[in-house]
Length: 468
Image 1 (cartoon, rainbow, N blue to C red):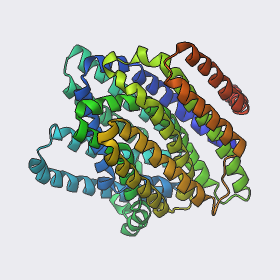
Image 2: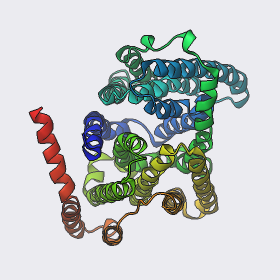
Image 3: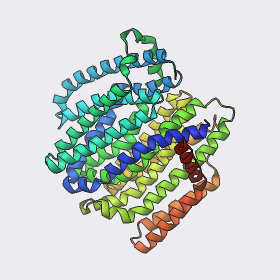
Image 4: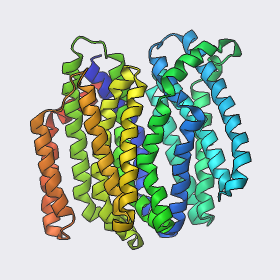
């Protein structure tokens, strides 16, 4: 199987499950925005945000280390067992320490709904580890099913809790926890983890080796948290939780876009790591990088062009203020995609320190701009600071990666995409449906024109898979 086919096949498998779950979750937005107040939704979003801060501090990113080192031992069940056993025991010890520290510190902070923050992080330590274990084994379908279970059970339980049981905010908490537990149970059973785990397999030296790789990812993830989540914290502090609810809804559309990138990133990371030493590496990476940029730029622009027509249908009028933020955040997420595509080279090189350095620089920029502008331009400070932070991180990684690996995006593609992006800024805010419809038609034509080769390849791949 060729590298391109391998990448396309893995991506296709992961996309099927994610597409279903994203559609279900996205089209329930009218339900959430109608039943929950902006303050309630803002509170829930903040606790999820804080959990993303705590997770890397608790698990030391050992799940990422597990995946990366399992790639080096694919097919070697004995070595995989040693890796899994060692890191599962370590994660359990870390979770117990987190439980003890949380019990000691929480009474001093008096956190509302603290039980959710405690349980969600502990469950996520294990689901993250088991997800990467399944992925490291090369079981993309099981990974996809687990993702489907997570989102679909959360969605179904949310509907039951909000509509039928009238549980409000507590219903969101409970359904999220139960879905994590169900996902974990599936992963344990489907991967037959008992065949890999044994106390005899535990290797302290192996743990140190993995920690050496994964530990530098902690400041990287904290930096990501600052870029992604400090906005919400600053908004909640200066403008209130209702304003954070508005900002959270604005992020729903960019999150759909970034989640589809996350699908591809799973197979992209694996492909780059497995083929990093190939002789034609630079040519291959440049070709794929240009194709991926065309794909994600087109997807970003089509979503933006559709929003003037889709937003009023999906979102309750009390959240209308979020519309003005979405375009800025969509462009920010496009740069985030590019950042992620280039960071795969660092993962292939096992150079986690570079990932951390470049992320921290963007995080500092984000929080400084946010604090300087929050009282002057309100919620716009958060979206603009996010855009500038990801643009800065992209420029840094683009220049740094190309010092060792030739992985550039072709200039004509960059120029054409920049022109379309500027035109959409004008039409998005013009409030003229005729002009916006013309912009939508032109954007769809541009997306088709720039990705016609990829579409042909996708159709051919689908036919080949169906024949088999």
